Image (cartoon, rainbow, N blue to C red; front, top):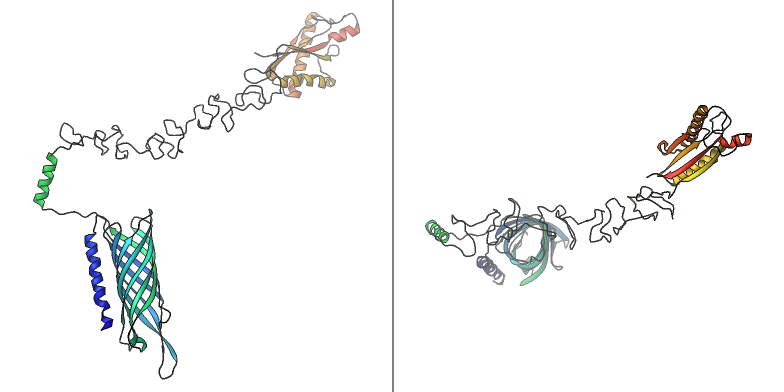
Amino acid sequence: MKKYITYPLFFGYIFQIFLISHVFGSDNQKLVISPFAGGYLFEGQQVFGGNTIYGLNLGYQFSKNWAVRLGGATGEFQHAYLDDQSFVENIDDFDVKLGYLDLMFHIPIFNRFTPYLFLGGGDLFLDLENKDQNHFPFLKYGAGTKIQLTNTISLWGECAHKIVQEDQEIVDRSGTEYRNNLMYVGGLSFSFGNRPRRVRQPAEQQKSYQKSIAKIPRKDILYDINGNPWDSDGDGVNEQKDLCAATPKGVPVGPNGCPFDEDNDGVFDYEDQCKNTDRYVTVDKYGCPKDSDGDGVYDMEDQCQDTPKTAVVDLKGCPVDNDKDGVYDGMDQCPETEPGMQVDEKGCPQLTESVTFSLNITFKSNSAEVDPQYFEELKKLADTMNKYPKSRVVIEAHTDNTGSNMANLKLSQKRANSVRSFVINYFDIEPYRIEAVGFGEEKPIADNRTPSGRRQNRRAIAILSNHQ
């Protein structure tokens, strides 16, 4: 008779579970279907060997924490026994079925990760031949965890300790034993429902109640002239609670009627072009970090917040002046000025006064050709012009008094043009920076009555000045 005591206990336990589900029922209700697979282990001294099992749970969650489930599983196990006649140990395969009912307590400590505990009982059916006992009642308890993958699908796994009632006749003994077995399973859960329960009222009573409520003005909301709740911007928040009463149509708002501002920068999300601004960063009207001087360095990091717009800045937002001439890079049209040189407002070296170069070039009589021996002499002129990129030069050419005045004027102009072409062609000086002027015999520097004097008068000079 002892082996039948567990059955009324088990069915009494089932009744308690349904009673609890009725008492603790809440608005968060849903059905859960959970296919699973796992393993079953028998206690060491038993003559059974476990194997893979497959099954299905049907659950009902009646509150945020509490749920019940009905489950079943099947598999194929092994039974070892000793033949009484041959004294040979045999191993047979046999079918197994499990059925159980559990009460579950969920512990939702994280967003998608929910541990849980469970307590239950059921029956283990072993399809053994020539044995008096095939059904083995059990109680079980255990723990598991659930990981939410989507709103309706979750991944779960659990382990249960089973206390199984065993009649010793199965091993040719008398009495009853309680065995410790282990079951571990995992699978997917699919939930359905999750709708709040509604209290049903008779149709007449419900309509009458709604009409009476509609006629009583509420003090916590405002009404328009037609007696309807006043919501001027149509965002779903009554005017009395709406702190942002001019919200554009269709913009999501919070309980106070104001649009959301996820990064708390003072610019609503629907206007915010930089929605992930770090905390305490000053932003502009578009919600982006503010850069008052437009140098690419935000104000919160900018140590020089009045930088001219075209200036190049360093990581601290301060202008860079690599040639130390007082004109910032980016504004400096001559960024490689030599140290100590006087520059203009654009950063280019400038002459404080005109400089006259005596080129020491002389020409053969009645000739305008520049002799190659004067290459170095003209290179000095080109180097000076490169040093002062804003400078201009006037090439002046002269003749002796041999020949007519008009012929000498034309010859001197040819000589000036020849020097100009030489500097342009050999030293890549821009043509617009060089002017050529011939003065004929008007400005002698030596006596034209002697061959030496006439040779000195056949000359060219360069006058270098800063271009304004």
